[in-house]
Image 1: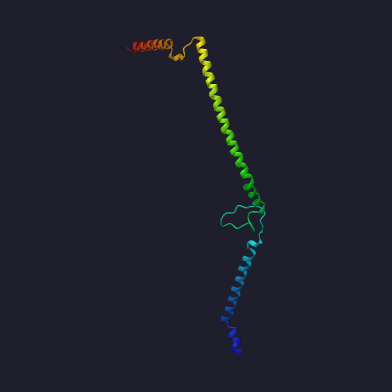
Image 2: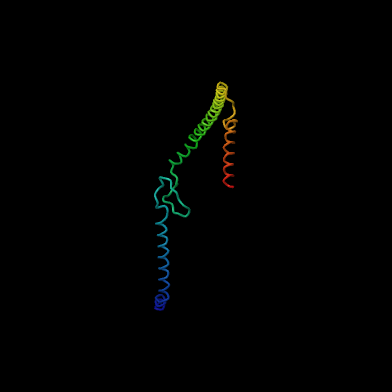
Length: 156
């Protein structure tokens, strides 16, 4: 019996016991840390969150609350189709207004042309522009000829 006691209290046995105790304590500490830092300790999600990949979630459960889901379904089912119908209606109105304004512009341009022709006939003027009139061309030719003559005379 004494031999058994001596064997059980040998330094090697004590080191083995200390190692086992240290290993069990370390494992317990790691498990305790993991348990306390688990996402289950987070609060229930009440608003939606932006989360980057790899970041821990700020809350547990669905990260998109039920109210936001209901709102998204309502928007998709009711509001979006109504907006599409409104858009199509407004596009149709815009096409009609563009056509009406185009026709009105053409009518105004025609009336302006007719009025200009009537005024030209009433005043006895020709329809040629002022810069194509013979009086203008002759005057400009005279001035250009005089200027060229003066320049040539100075150069000699």
